Length: 175
Image 1 (tube, rainbow, N blue to C red):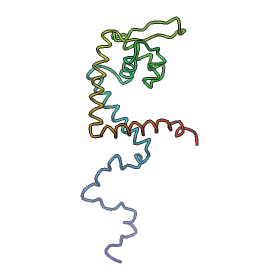
Image 2 (cartoon, one colour; image 1 turned 30 degrees about the vertical axis):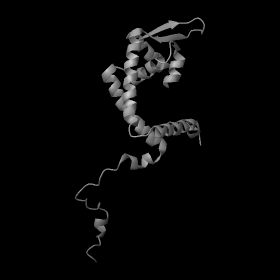
Image 3 (cartoon, one colour; image 1 turned 180 degrees about the vertical axis):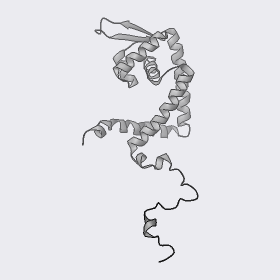
Image 4 (cartoon, rainbow, N blue to C red; image 1 turned 120 degrees about the vertical axis):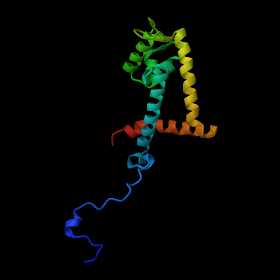
Protein backbone atom coordinates (compact mmCIF):
# COMPACT_ATOMS: atom_id res chain seq x y z
CA UNK A 1 0.00 0.00 0.00
CA UNK A 2 1.46 3.35 -0.97
CA UNK A 3 1.87 6.12 1.52
CA UNK A 4 -0.53 8.35 -0.42
CA UNK A 5 -3.32 5.79 -0.63
CA UNK A 6 -6.01 6.12 2.03
CA UNK A 7 -7.36 3.22 4.03
CA UNK A 8 -11.02 2.16 3.50
CA UNK A 9 -11.97 3.79 6.82
CA UNK A 10 -10.28 7.02 5.82
CA UNK A 11 -12.24 7.10 2.55
CA UNK A 12 -15.41 8.03 4.45
CA UNK A 13 -13.74 10.80 6.38
CA UNK A 14 -13.62 14.29 4.93
CA UNK A 15 -10.24 15.31 3.56
CA UNK A 16 -8.05 17.30 5.92
CA UNK A 17 -8.75 21.03 5.91
CA UNK A 18 -6.31 23.36 4.29
CA UNK A 19 -4.29 25.59 6.57
CA UNK A 20 -6.15 28.60 5.17
CA UNK A 21 -9.82 28.61 4.22
CA UNK A 22 -10.46 29.22 0.54
CA UNK A 23 -10.87 32.84 -0.51
CA UNK A 24 -14.51 33.92 -0.60
CA UNK A 25 -16.09 33.72 -4.02
CA UNK A 26 -16.77 37.12 -5.57
CA UNK A 27 -20.51 37.70 -5.91
CA UNK A 28 -20.13 38.20 -9.64
CA UNK A 29 -18.54 34.72 -9.90
CA UNK A 30 -21.19 32.90 -7.84
CA UNK A 31 -23.36 30.46 -9.80
CA UNK A 32 -26.54 32.37 -8.96
CA UNK A 33 -25.07 35.47 -10.58
CA UNK A 34 -24.33 33.72 -13.85
CA UNK A 35 -27.97 34.48 -14.68
CA UNK A 36 -28.33 38.09 -15.80
CA UNK A 37 -31.70 38.62 -14.11
CA UNK A 38 -30.35 37.36 -10.77
CA UNK A 39 -27.26 39.54 -11.09
CA UNK A 40 -29.35 42.63 -11.93
CA UNK A 41 -31.63 41.91 -8.96
CA UNK A 42 -28.62 41.59 -6.65
CA UNK A 43 -27.19 44.92 -7.81
CA UNK A 44 -30.65 46.50 -7.60
CA UNK A 45 -31.07 45.22 -4.04
CA UNK A 46 -27.77 46.79 -2.99
CA UNK A 47 -28.70 50.07 -4.69
CA UNK A 48 -32.17 50.01 -3.10
CA UNK A 49 -30.80 49.28 0.37
CA UNK A 50 -28.36 52.18 0.12
CA UNK A 51 -31.01 54.53 -1.24
CA UNK A 52 -33.48 53.44 1.43
CA UNK A 53 -30.99 54.18 4.20
CA UNK A 54 -30.07 57.52 2.65
CA UNK A 55 -33.62 58.82 2.10
CA UNK A 56 -34.87 57.45 5.42
CA UNK A 57 -32.02 59.10 7.33
CA UNK A 58 -32.01 62.39 5.41
CA UNK A 59 -35.72 62.94 4.65
CA UNK A 60 -37.54 60.30 6.72
CA UNK A 61 -38.88 58.80 3.49
CA UNK A 62 -39.29 55.16 2.58
CA UNK A 63 -38.68 54.14 -1.01
CA UNK A 64 -42.40 53.99 -1.88
CA UNK A 65 -42.90 57.52 -0.57
CA UNK A 66 -39.75 58.65 -2.39
CA UNK A 67 -40.99 57.20 -5.67
CA UNK A 68 -44.46 58.73 -5.23
CA UNK A 69 -43.00 62.13 -4.35
CA UNK A 70 -40.70 62.04 -7.38
CA UNK A 71 -43.63 61.09 -9.65
CA UNK A 72 -45.79 63.97 -8.43
CA UNK A 73 -42.98 66.50 -8.61
CA UNK A 74 -42.88 66.39 -12.39
CA UNK A 75 -46.46 67.65 -12.76
CA UNK A 76 -48.97 69.96 -11.13
CA UNK A 77 -51.61 67.25 -10.71
CA UNK A 78 -51.53 63.47 -10.91
CA UNK A 79 -54.26 60.98 -10.23
CA UNK A 80 -53.30 58.10 -7.96
CA UNK A 81 -53.26 55.62 -10.86
CA UNK A 82 -50.77 57.83 -12.73
CA UNK A 83 -48.57 58.11 -9.64
CA UNK A 84 -48.63 54.33 -9.27
CA UNK A 85 -47.66 53.81 -12.92
CA UNK A 86 -44.92 56.44 -12.94
CA UNK A 87 -43.48 55.27 -9.60
CA UNK A 88 -43.75 51.58 -10.56
CA UNK A 89 -45.90 50.91 -7.48
CA UNK A 90 -49.12 49.00 -7.15
CA UNK A 91 -52.21 51.15 -6.60
CA UNK A 92 -52.50 50.33 -2.89
CA UNK A 93 -48.83 51.23 -2.19
CA UNK A 94 -49.17 54.49 -4.15
CA UNK A 95 -52.34 55.40 -2.28
CA UNK A 96 -50.76 54.63 1.10
CA UNK A 97 -47.64 56.65 0.20
CA UNK A 98 -49.72 59.63 -0.90
CA UNK A 99 -51.68 59.54 2.36
CA UNK A 100 -48.43 59.57 4.32
CA UNK A 101 -47.10 62.49 2.24
CA UNK A 102 -50.43 64.28 2.71
CA UNK A 103 -50.22 63.80 6.50
CA UNK A 104 -46.80 65.48 6.42
CA UNK A 105 -48.27 68.42 4.55
CA UNK A 106 -46.24 67.76 1.39
CA UNK A 107 -49.10 66.60 -0.84
CA UNK A 108 -52.62 67.93 -1.27
CA UNK A 109 -55.34 65.50 -2.37
CA UNK A 110 -58.44 66.79 -4.14
CA UNK A 111 -61.40 64.75 -5.33
CA UNK A 112 -62.32 65.35 -8.94
CA UNK A 113 -65.72 65.18 -10.57
CA UNK A 114 -64.40 64.87 -14.12
CA UNK A 115 -62.57 61.57 -13.56
CA UNK A 116 -65.10 59.68 -11.49
CA UNK A 117 -63.88 58.97 -7.96
CA UNK A 118 -60.27 59.72 -8.82
CA UNK A 119 -58.29 61.98 -6.53
CA UNK A 120 -55.74 64.46 -7.79
CA UNK A 121 -52.43 64.67 -5.95
CA UNK A 122 -50.29 67.79 -6.08
CA UNK A 123 -47.36 69.13 -4.11
CA UNK A 124 -47.94 71.80 -1.50
CA UNK A 125 -45.45 74.68 -1.36
CA UNK A 126 -43.61 72.83 1.44
CA UNK A 127 -43.79 69.62 -0.61
CA UNK A 128 -42.26 71.39 -3.58
CA UNK A 129 -39.35 72.52 -1.42
CA UNK A 130 -38.82 68.97 -0.13
CA UNK A 131 -39.20 67.55 -3.66
CA UNK A 132 -36.43 69.85 -4.91
CA UNK A 133 -34.13 68.76 -2.07
CA UNK A 134 -34.89 65.08 -2.70
CA UNK A 135 -34.44 65.50 -6.47
CA UNK A 136 -31.09 67.24 -5.95
CA UNK A 137 -29.98 64.45 -3.61
CA UNK A 138 -31.06 61.83 -6.16
CA UNK A 139 -29.10 63.63 -8.88
CA UNK A 140 -25.95 63.66 -6.73
CA UNK A 141 -26.34 59.95 -5.99
CA UNK A 142 -26.89 59.27 -9.68
CA UNK A 143 -23.75 61.21 -10.60
CA UNK A 144 -21.70 59.16 -8.14
CA UNK A 145 -23.09 55.95 -9.64
CA UNK A 146 -22.14 56.84 -13.22
CA UNK A 147 -18.99 58.84 -12.48
CA UNK A 148 -16.69 56.25 -14.06
CA UNK A 149 -18.69 56.11 -17.31
CA UNK A 150 -18.53 58.40 -20.32
CA UNK A 151 -21.73 60.11 -21.47
CA UNK A 152 -21.87 57.67 -24.39
CA UNK A 153 -21.53 54.69 -22.06
CA UNK A 154 -24.34 56.01 -19.85
CA UNK A 155 -26.60 56.32 -22.91
CA UNK A 156 -25.63 52.83 -24.04
CA UNK A 157 -26.39 51.46 -20.57
CA UNK A 158 -29.83 53.12 -20.61
CA UNK A 159 -30.48 51.65 -24.05
CA UNK A 160 -29.47 48.16 -22.95
CA UNK A 161 -31.53 48.34 -19.76
CA UNK A 162 -34.60 49.47 -21.72
CA UNK A 163 -34.14 46.52 -24.08
CA UNK A 164 -33.91 44.16 -21.11
CA UNK A 165 -37.06 45.73 -19.65
CA UNK A 166 -38.91 45.12 -22.93
CA UNK A 167 -38.09 41.42 -22.67
CA UNK A 168 -39.22 40.96 -19.07
CA UNK A 169 -42.68 39.70 -20.18
CA UNK A 170 -40.97 37.14 -22.45
CA UNK A 171 -38.81 35.92 -19.59
CA UNK A 172 -41.77 35.71 -17.23
CA UNK A 173 -43.90 33.77 -19.73
CA UNK A 174 -44.55 30.17 -18.83
CA UNK A 175 -42.28 27.58 -20.43
